Image 1 (cartoon, helix red, strand yellow):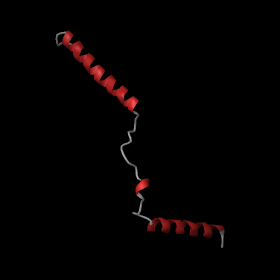
Image 2 (cartoon, rainbow, N blue to C red; image 1 turned 135 degrees about the horizontal axis):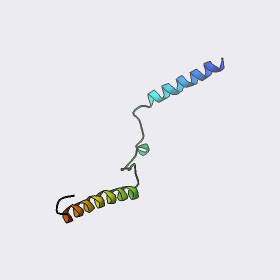
Image 3 (tube, helix red, strand yellow; image 1 turned 90 degrees about the vertical axis):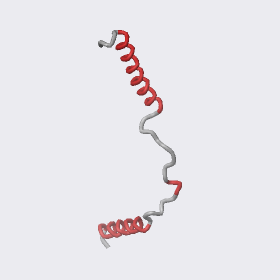
Image 4 (cartoon, helix red, strand yellow; image 1 turned 180 degrees about the horizontal axis):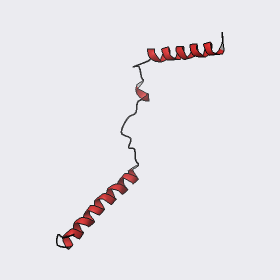
Length: 68
C-alpha cells in the first residue's frame, strides 16, 4: 500500500467516525454562561467616557443658554 493510499484511508476513516458522532456532544464541553468579548474594566471605561462626555455636553449647553 502506498503512503498516499494509507493517508487517504486514514482521512476517510476519521471523516466517517466524525459523521457517526454528530449530535452526541457531551454537556460538559458546551459553554455555560456569558463571555464578553471585552473585559469588564474596558467596558466600564467606555461607559464612563460616553456618559461623562454626554453629561459634559449637557452642562456646557445649559450654561451657554442653549447656544453651543
